[in-house]
Structure formats: structure tokens, C-alpha cells
Length: 513
Image (tube, helix red, strand yellow):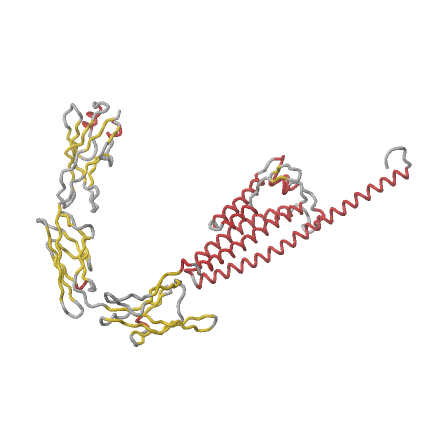
């Protein structure tokens, strides 16, 4: 085929040989295209199966959340987030595939999907990333970051998402660094790019399934976690005398608010409890029985649960003690160990073991609000004595008393713009500052209202001011002050309804300009 003068016959043979080679290449190309098409169909079928499995998992989780909302409702919220994030990204990829298949007359004729110019133009026109190409990258990044936010507490899943859905630059076999779009989509036949998009959808479906599985596994793990256990005390008897050895035992008990018995059979000191004497709340049996006479009392019986279609019995054998009647009162000032003159002092007055409606307290200035809540407004004197009487269930009356000191309110602290020590301000700042008064380090929430003060500038007459801010005359005096002068807010007057407020402390301010 090379060199020398060739006969017409030889030229014809050479031409036929070239046509034969071209036909072989063309047939091989069609075979490869068909292989990509069949691969795409296979992956799409797998995606349909994965979709059905994920839908079944979501339906099962919906049922669990309906049956045990306390346990599975938060998990359902996360699963719904995963489902929405996955669907949004899957549907975006599906629309992209539909656009690609729409460029040919028959999307099932893979032999004609040999061109690579569609994504080259749509993603990388002129060698630069187009708006559609950037959207493709943004959608992948958004899917990854949104999913990682849901599984933030699972480093393994976060790493998998980074690995599968991060459009990073790639180094090819020749050692040349290429962009993600260049390496994965530029120059590929259309059917090959479609198969790649379908494979990306498969990764989305598999990731969704893995996340849902991990969430459910995490819930099962948390159920048996030691965090769900508490300690219980078991002892042969409920009360011990001085000098005895306490022989109690500490055991573990698992907490589960969703666990409830099918039926309850309990007895108190041998007497069967009726439905009105207990309730089932958050996995607990809440008893509502009288404490009975002083001494030990036993609760026996069983709780019955369903397990694999069978009724299982859990025996109950517990005890409690009823203590004798109280003989002393509990009297406490809610704020401190004294009461203050001129303000209502909240107090709690009770008798151990006696309901509030059977307790009475009396003292000058003392009034009951409700139950065991009282308010003390002391008058003159240095102390006040509170007397308490209580009527026991036996009809007997017991009494007690306590004496409290009476103190006057402390002196309020004057402030300029909420500052009172080492105050330094510019003239303009000071001209608009507010003068106030507060009870510092005082337990009562009292806020006196400033009504006026004297403003003193060195070398100038004192200026009386009404209200909380400098008036025009005071501002003019301030303008004549020199840098470094110490101006003073003195004789600050403050009022508080129903309270005789002491004189407010002065405030000194250094002029800084």
C-alpha cells in the first residue's frame, strides 16, 4: 500500500481495505454504545428497587412513630429531611437526563447516541464552565452539605458523602490535572454521560438507604445504652434505727417512657388496688393510695406485658414506711434571713406533713397569698415574731414560732448611663446621658425613679435639674468645663411608690475632651 506506482486494481484493493477497517470500527462503536445503553437500563432498574425499599423503610418508620411517638417521632423528622433532600437532587438529575435524551429521536436507539457535544456545550462552552455547569456542581455540593447537616453526629457517613459527592479536580493517567466536569463529561458519548448520571442517581438512592438504616440502628443502640439506665435501691425494710447495719442493694433499672404493661395486678398490705388507686404514666405505675398508719407497708403483685404474642409476668414486691405525725414547723424567708421595711417580703410558711389549708400563721404585717405563700410588710421595731399553728389529721393542734430581724432598705447608688465608678465621658456623650438610681447587690427587684439632681461644674454655681437628663442651663455649664474637670451629679432625688427612699449617692464624672 506504500510507495511506487500502483495499478488501478491495487488502488481499488487498498480503498476496499480502508473501508473494511472503517466498517469494523463503526460496528465496534455501536457495540460499545449499546453496552452503555444496556448498563444504563440495568442501573435504572436497580434505582427503582432501591426507591421501593426506601419507601418501605419510610412507611415502617411512620408506623413506629405512630405507635411510639416519644421514641420515634424525632427520628421520623430526620428521615423526612433525608427523603426530601434525596428526592430534590434525584429529580434534578432526572430532568437533566430527560433533556439529554430529548436530543435524539429515539432514546432507546443507543447507536445514535455517539456524540459528546451536548454536555460539552451545556457545561463547558469555550473551555469555561457555563451557568448550567455551575448549577450541576452547586446541586451536588448542596446535596452533600444538606445531608451532612442531618448526619452531623456520624463521621463515617459524612466521610462517605465527601468521597462520593465532592466535585474536585482529578489527575488523569498522564499526570494532567483536570476539572471535575472536564474529566467526567467532556468528549464522552451521550449515552455514556446518561449512564454516568444514572449511576449518580444510584449513589443517591444507596446513600439514602444507608442513612435511614444508620438512623434506625442508632435508635436501637440508644435504647440499650447505659444512658437509659437508672439506679434503684432494694432493701429488706424501709426504715432503720441508729446503730443498725444498712443492708440495701443498688440495682440497675432501664427507663423507657413508651413501655406500658398490658394489665396490672397490685395489692397493698394484702388488699387489691382498684383502677382509681393507680395510673400508668410514661412507663411508670403511679400509685394514689393513702399512706396508712405509721409503720411499714408492702406492695405486692405483678405487671403483665405482651412479648412475642405471649403474656409475660414481672413480679412486684416493694415496701414503704409511714412516719409519725410532725411536731415542728418549717418557716423560711424566700429572699434572706431578714425582712425589709417598706417592701412586701415573700415568705413560705409550712408545717412538715400538714397541708397548707390546715396551717395558720400570724404576725404584724403578715398576709397569706395562697397555700403556704405569705407576704410580710413589717412596720416599726427591730424584730417581728411569726407564730404558726397546725391542725393534724388526728385533730390535735401543734404550734411553733420564729423571730426575724427588720432592716431598712439600703441606700440607692446613683448612676450616669448605668455607670457609677471611675466614670469618664466626652462632653457630647455626657450631655445626653441619663441619671438613674439602683439598689446594687440587693435581692429585691426595685427600681427607684429619679426626679431631679444638682449638677456641679468646678468654678461654677450648682445648677438644679428636674428629671433624668441635663437641661439647657446645665449643658451650657458643661461646655465651659475644662478637659480633666470632675463634674458632679449631687443630691440625686428618687422615689419609689410606697417606699421611703434614702438619699441617693453622688456620681462624679471626668471630662475627657
